[in-house]
Image (cartoon, one colour):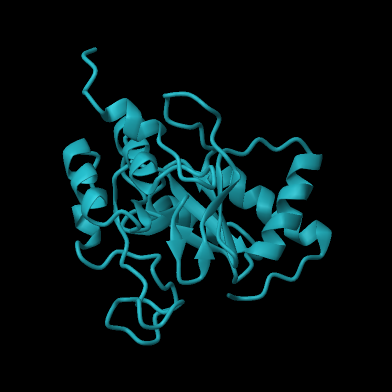
Amino acid sequence: MREIPGRRRRLLSRRSDGRPEPISAALTFATQWRWPVLPGVAQDPRHPGRCGCPDPECTVPGAHPFDPGLLAATTDARMVGWWWTNRPTAPIILATGGTAPCAVSLPALAAARALGALDRVGMRLGPVVASPTRWSILVKPYSLEQLGELLHAKDFVPGSLRFHGEGGYLALPPSETGAGQIRWERAPLPGSASPWVPDVEAVVDAVVDALTRTGVSAPEL
């Protein structure tokens, strides 16, 4: 395959703190893994920690799309490169579902204890995205019908679980948002292929069981 000049340097470029540049990460997600991405809204420069969108009460500052909207998410290298060349610090937003992973998220403390319990029983997980308040376990794409049947079959599902499916979104590392840095709690294995992710049924079953067995109270956040 013909190499595109400059692409390799962008994909491998890193900041002084060792983390990849947002443009490098965004191009990797879009071109190597075929995950549709778009830039998130910037933080308000006058009020650090607040979102740059018109909503003064925004609950996910900097961690959501605004302009362009979610439907603009793409895997096109030229578009992704143009976006982050013009907005180099923009958060990277994944449009979940379709050809991209979905996610199951829960509060950070409960997630840390649940993942520890899953490790002890040998549960295989794929990448896990962490923000200061919530962790998101990436899963295979699922439909609303599939999710509805899964939840209906359960006697109890913690109200703090959130589901990022078709039409949803998730901020990816190394984004900086109003809530803080987005990082990998469980990083994808190195390689050019799209990372492996488990089925949503396995993750929901395991997380609910782990939270129940460990007695973790997962407050709504």
